[in-house]
Amino acid sequence: MRKKDDAKRLMIFEVSLDVLLEFGFGGFSMGKVAKRANIAVGTIYLYFKNKDELISQLYIKLYKESVERFLEHYDSSLPFKDGLKTVWVNYLKHRIEHYKESHFLEFYYRSPYINESQKLMAEEMKKPVKDIIQRGKDLGLVRKDLDNEMIFLGMLGFIRELADEHVGNVYKLSDEKIEKAFEMSWNMIKL
Image (tube, rainbow, N blue to C red; front, side):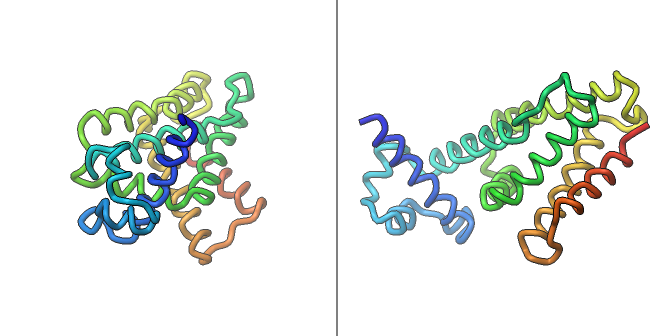
């Protein structure tokens, strides 16, 4: 029974993501999710007490999955630049391959629906990447005149724009362009 419940919750999350991106928070309803998922509205209430809980749990689920993807294959024993590149490319690929999820995470983070504990969680989930940046500073490889948040946001903003343009078929990325884009980011922060 547990696997069936997990599959049902996952399906509700997937449909909810589509409904949220199509209608926004104001147009989101359990009824729309149920109709699109071809299930009874009451079925959703077996898993979530209300739409706010559903949206909140969707945010938490997607955020945790995102952070896991960012750090995939990262090894602190690698030379610093190689490790940073691993995380940088992971974020770019995540943004492209999980575009809907990334868009929702930003949308939710900047919405009035996010609560203080979720904001703190989001900040805590940035910590591993900021720790990598700090490691580069400690090794004397990364600029110390820029704070870690500025470096993080500079790289993140560039990655987001690259991915968004790629997904929108405006600027298609190749392995060569990804390599050059990472070098641009690296040149921005290196000593």
